[in-house]
Image (tube, rainbow, N blue to C red):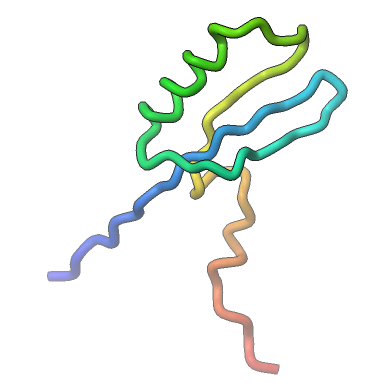
Length: 74
């Protein structure tokens, strides 16, 4: 019986600016709940209009899955 691999996600806080810029904060969170709690605290402070804050997992659907493959022998 083969064991199913488990994936441990790391959550990042991503801030997007109104003109398309994006910053990923260097701090990570172990759970999505920790990340969303940080957003809740962040939103208690006045912020400029147009800025958005999101939690993004390390295994985001926006990443290139090809990076996980081993390079082909040439």
